Image 1 (tube, rainbow, N blue to C red):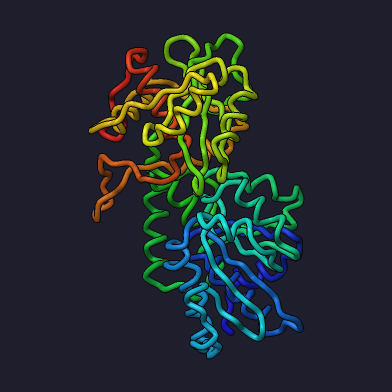
Image 2 (cartoon, one colour):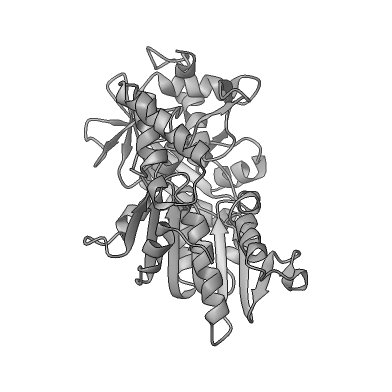
Length: 391
């Protein structure tokens, strides 16, 4: 099997949690899959290996496709061992399965020997914890460092369980791609902020932030004592998380947001219990997703001041515009909210130009925040309703 320098670096990791931070073209995912295949061919007992990512379609286009490609290249593929119904492949008695975190039954299902979380910074800490506690041996986490993530907390101080890769670790990268990277580096050296961020993240594998995020924000340690509690938003879910951000106003322009709830699989009485356990939530106003009037009614029956959010044509952009009129401060403990903010961007056309439609993901807490903004902040901001993507 032909392997890269990236593979050799990955193969040296031996901790329970093995973290691989890499740029585009570094072969991080491909190399981990090669490692898994080799492990299966040498296994002396049956192993169960799970490859997991943010969604099944994402896996089907990426890691799962690469897995099958490698098996075919190495003459290890036999269609009779490929269970397309269950999305798994059996190799030397070992089962390699793949599924997205949106599959709650598998997320909280059977145990496995080895776990590979592909592009791990696109899943939340809760999902990872559910996977981690059901993994017997070791775990690979790979990610493109386009934004800050909970993953950092798992990196040892001496970096013994961590490796950072770039395109220079992939000896088989095409000359055309290498030339593209060199041109990007030249543009970055001329002072372009966009190309500097691009090169840091996608060429050298350094930590950065996705270009074009909808909201700008700053982190804050605690809720300031001079801030006023405004209320909360509530986005309902089940397979998706139920999400509640609490919102505070300081002065006229500072909006402080604190994540209160981000959890899937909750039934109505569990949501009620969470709200009643927080005096501000229980006594304050909660603006809820109006598509679930039966849950709103149950909240009201439990003496919770809940009402449906304003919806209609243009309400998404209106809510975004209102929030962009404030200085957003996010508490550091709001990990899932920070993850959403770092991934919530505008849709783009075939020419990579931004459209006036936000992507419909990474937005559970942000949708809830927007519900609150439309109800409580529409006349508060002095700068609102100016969408920054137009600037």
